[in-house]
Amino acid sequence: MKSRSFKRAFADVREAWDHRELWGHLGWQDIKQRYRRSVIGPLWITISMATTALALGLLYSTLLDTPINTFLPYVTVGFIIWNFILGCVTEGTDVFIANEGLIKHLPAPITIHVMRMVWRQVLFLMHNLVVYVIVLAIFFGALDEPYKMTPTGPTNPGLSWEIVLAVPGLVLLAVNAVWVALLFGVISTRFRDIPPVVNSFINLVFFMTPIVWDASILTRVTGGGDVGWRVLVAELNPVYHFVEIVRAPLLGHTVDWHHWVVVGGFTVLGWFAALVILRNYRARVSYWV
Image (cartoon, rainbow, N blue to C red):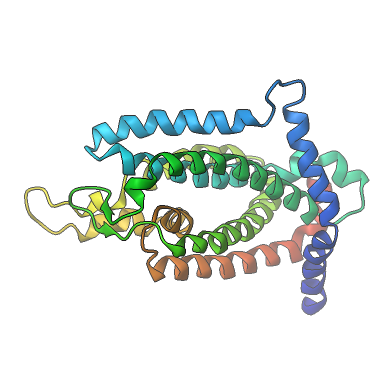
C-alpha cells in the first residue's frame, strides 16, 4: 500500500511536468493580467528592483564603509535572488488556497498549481536579471579583477568563466521552490494560520541573511575574543547557502564547496518530506480548500 501511495505521489509530479505547456501558458497569462492596461507592463518589475537595489546599496555602502563599485552589484544580485525566494515562499503557502476554484472543478494534478506559481516567479527573476546586466556593464572594471568587498574581507578573484555556475544554482533554486510550495501549500490548506506566520517570520530571515551586508563582517574582531560563534549567524541560515550558489559566480566570488553540499542536502530532504506529504494528503487538499 505504501508503495502504491508513493507511486501516486510521483505520478502527480510527473503528470504535472507532462502538462508543462498548460502551466507555462498560465504563468505567462498571470503576468499579462497583472500588468494589463499598464503602459510599460512588466518593466515595472525591473524598475522596482533597480530602485530598491540602488537606494539600499548607496545607504549600506556608506554605513558599512564599503566601496560602492563592488557593494552595489553585491546588493543588487542579493535582492534579485531574495525576491525569487520570497515570492516562492509567500505565494507557496497560499498556492492551493488561491486556486480553490480550479482545484475543485478541474481534475488535474495539484502539482500543476505549484509549477505555475514557480514558473511565474522564474519569469519575474528573468526580468530582474536585466538590472544585473546593467549594473555589471557599469561596474565591470571593478569586478573584472581581484577585489575585496570589505577591508578585512577575503580577496575575490573577479569575474571568470565560473559565472556559468550560476546556471545550475538557479536550477536548484527552482527545484527547491517546488518542494517548498508543495510542503507549505498542503499544510497551509489545513492550518490557515501558517501563511501569516510565514509572512511575519520571513522578514526576520531577510535581516539575518547576508543580503545588504557581507558575511565577512562577522569575522571582524573588536576588543579581542573569539568570533567563531558569529559565523554561525550566517552558516546556520539555509537561505544564505541558496543565495550564495548563485550570487558568488555572478560577482566573481569563489563558491565554497560546502554551500553546494548544504543546498544538495536540503534538496534531497525537502523533496522527501514533500513527497511524504503529497502521498498522505494530496487527496484531501480539495476538501480543505
